Length: 75
Ligand code: SF4
Ligand code: SF4
Image (cartoon, rainbow, N blue to C red; front, side, top):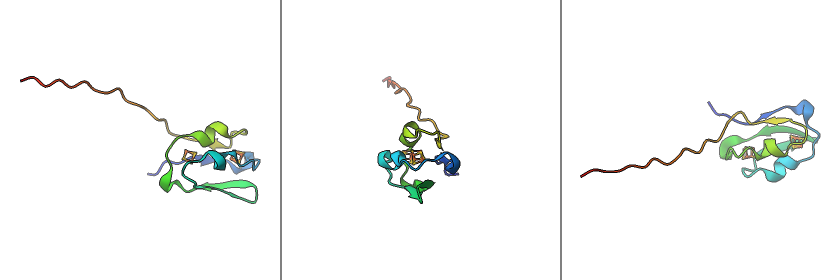
């Protein structure tokens, strides 16, 4: 399953901020309304959700940075 940002067209005011910050270039606005995200190159940065002033975008994923594991080899 491909996880991608969820768009709520009813809340979109067409400001274009999400398109400006999106690093994958896959956000598409048609007729001043956000229409879709082509997620082939989505980097899951969640910037689109952060900048959206109306709450029209939800990123249902969380980036987790795991602690590095210290591996010691015994001889
Ligand atoms: S999560 Fe990041 S890369 Fe993916 S659509 Fe949003 S702004 Fe673009
Ligand atoms: S930032 Fe939000 S309100 Fe602005 S175009 Fe994108 S989805 Fe619509």
